[in-house]
Structures are given as C-alpha cells and as structure tokens.
Length: 114
Image 1 (cartoon, rainbow, N blue to C red):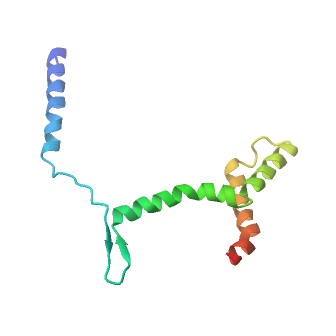
Image 2: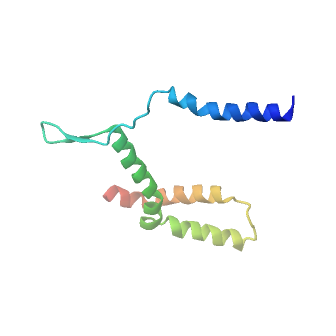
Image 3: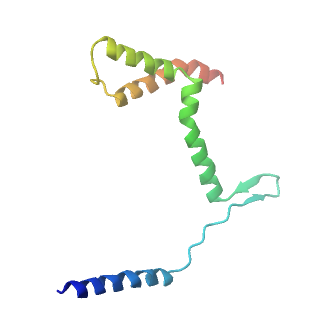
C-alpha cells in the first residue's frame, strides 16, 4: 500500500474511535448514601462500605508496625542474617513471613486480653 493512503486510513480510524463510546450507555457511579433504619441503626451503600474497607486495609501495615513487636523481630532477623555472613540467602519475603508468624505467637497473650 501507498504510505499516504495508509496514513489517511489510520487517521480516519482514529477519528472514528470516539464515536464507539457515544453508542455506549452512560456510566454512572452509585451514590454514597447513609440511611437510618426504624430501629435506629444505619445502613451504608456498598460503595461507601468498599471505601471504608479499603481505608482500613491501608492502615493495617502501620498498625502492625507500631503496636506489635514486628519491627524489633524483623530488625533482629536482618542483623542475624548479616552476622552469619549471608547477604540475601533467606530472602526478605521469608524473613517477613517468619517475623509475622513470631509476632502473632509473641502477641497472642496480649490479643487474648484485648
């Protein structure tokens, strides 16, 4: 094919692509709503529940690091890895997994009291 013809066809296709989106149904996000029930409780829309859940999930790592012994355990594992002369033999993923397990084990009595 000729280069000008190919260029003309490709420009025409690019100009026609936005018309496909005009044929689609308009997308609308569900409203964020809080409604009160007869017994005084509140019910939240699914969108608002997802936003609250994602917010709580984003704070979980900070809570684990601030309120548990996780940071101390992972620092000790890092120092231990350097002390025995290994650079990256137990990978960071394995060290974090072990530190999480030990954190749950060490903090279990505290979690039972709370």
